[in-house]
Image (tube, rainbow, N blue to C red; front, side, top):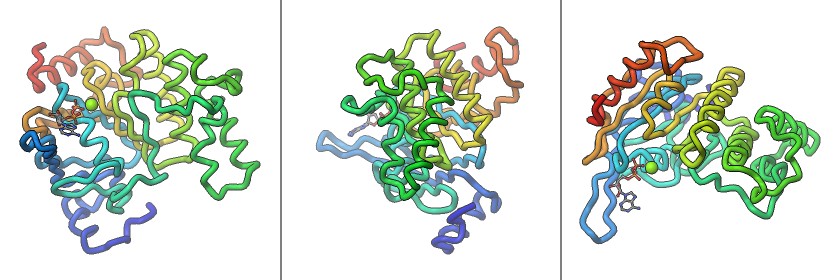
Length: 270
Ligand code: ADP
Ligand code: MG
């Protein structure tokens, strides 16, 4: 994988901790204290876990346990107070195009069409124009929005806007897809459809996905493993393997057992 030999001293340390594996994401002892004058808030405390490349990992926990803070640290949007994050072996210090980032509130450009939004990140890449156009066509096809390519975001439903955001994040072919409650603003039916679509994209592209949600059933639907967080201070309570074959059915007893187990860990009751 690209970048494993960069910054070899700290890299060796991280490789030791994770058994030398070809790790997609390594979160190592991450702490974050906010101090905006109203007294310090320990949003994250000694958070460590690894995501293997190609793995689908969900981070789940109650509101305020530091999920968005963790997402922002991994994306390079804010710095950690302690510890480090590596993606493909390289320390994260700023946002990069190796990561596709999807926020809860779409963040589409209202003055650009669907097609222009999807191609936005590619415009700044050095790929030839023909290749960029092909890539946009592929991404529109992947998320089923080809016929809406000339529409503007304001005429789209919430589910369609989030598909545009997903297509845009995938267009630059990132190693890692990082998502913070991406389906939080759509209705339950659309949400289940987007979950299925995301799993299809993941299965067909082999991307590494780190997906933040407060919805336990969503995490059990999607993840290979679930990082369960607890609040005050934000920390890892446990990491749960979801050994339920896909596609997963909510009515399956094994599905229900995993949901109950994770709910118990976050103290939400069964
Ligand atoms: P989650 O996404 O799990 O709901 P957050 O990461 O948004 O959690 O917040 C974790 C904690 O950090 C909360 O107590 C929140 O109030 C606090 N927090 C988040 N952002 C800031 C900020 N910019 N300044 C001060 N405190 C913050
Ligand atoms: Mg959040």
